[in-house]
Image (tube, rainbow, N blue to C red):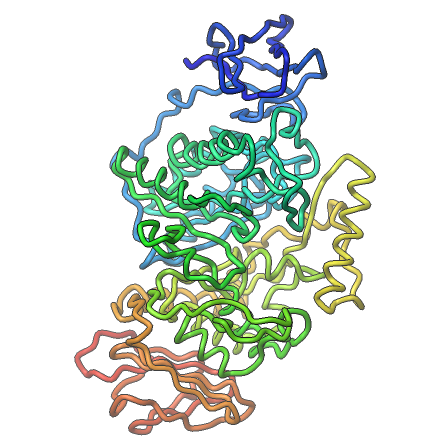
Length: 585
């Protein structure tokens, strides 16, 4: 057992409350304080700085009494793992499935999620991505306002619950990715600033003061975040992290925090024999995020690509408000398909400046793409999924373009069957003033996106959370069952045709007609053709005589030599080699 330690460089004295006794900690250098003996696993404890109120440990591994209560020590070695021979599948050939633990299952817990894993395996998912599970204030929330970064949320099942979920996923061949948030902490239960210089007023993020990553005292702050990442990977056997909003990690150090984290995660992978991946959410459109550290980059394995989403969403829905003002042309969707970024140094009307840098030479497997994710659904005023915005034929086209793209596809929970439940923004803060501020903030955010005419549901009302739960019984009913089967066939296609996992963008041909609204992709022996127009039309397919139909979203697709007849809002996959193995049309 390790001794109890805490970093509190400005404190003159530090004490720990253990049950009914209070004991002083000794200063051990570098701003650290230490108890002269270890404490037993399962012991509750809290710190007092200079005789002040009791505070939870910034590195608490369990917070059974909430984010403002005492911490509880955890002995990770006591958990009986069954994944000794586990190796995660490669992300480059993966299909990612994003989950919010609280709304994914009726129970809303880690154990409840285990009951749904077989459905993901049957679908063809390879990577389960969990929205943040670090402890946050209240029982209900998205998790991006976490404050107990080392402690799995108690309402979900705490440390052992998360371990059971990861172990069960590995037993089924599923890798587990976890969202982590290092660009800010939540507004309730955040006591870090009382312990040391964790934040700086030199920078600001949209959520308040930025973490101190490059100022005085920043070495230990960076250590805090790196140790947190390593804990999830080491003690919980997580296979990779998705790092939230890295553009808000404001760091002018010679070695950026992400590059430092990359090196430390690689060292852990070498020591344990298991590869771990790092994925960034970035608004920068900067290939440096996925450039190896030895070439001056941040070294992330992949990054989320909002340009792809915005281009696809605007083409299919016709929306042009807010950041969708930058999109809407089929040419932009074609550019996203063939180049990764749409805004790669060109002028962005929404930003009123040039944005991004070219991603030429970057492999498509460095981008994670999606038609839906928690942000693009949940940040809408009514939490509207694509199901509420598009008819089933367009949903099938969207699925085809995501799952057959040269990128790593991501599905948001329930997307595969066109779930009718919204995914609303919800919280459960106890501070009335904070509740009011969140309500007003939601209205401002919706207005900024051009949705001011819609009054968003109250995030604090329990109904906002309850309405967001998935209804798994829908999968057996139409039109959900047909959409679910379509997703299964597309994923099976992706896994059985090697060219669909080829991320070399220079090997993919993209053709389109803006006026007629058709688009085709050339992927090795396969041709993917879609008609987004309002009438049937014949679409030319480049690359020689088309010999066979592999799969189609509509029964009325017809092949005529080197052309294919497509009904409105339909997608077809065609093979150009007679010996190719394929599904019946």
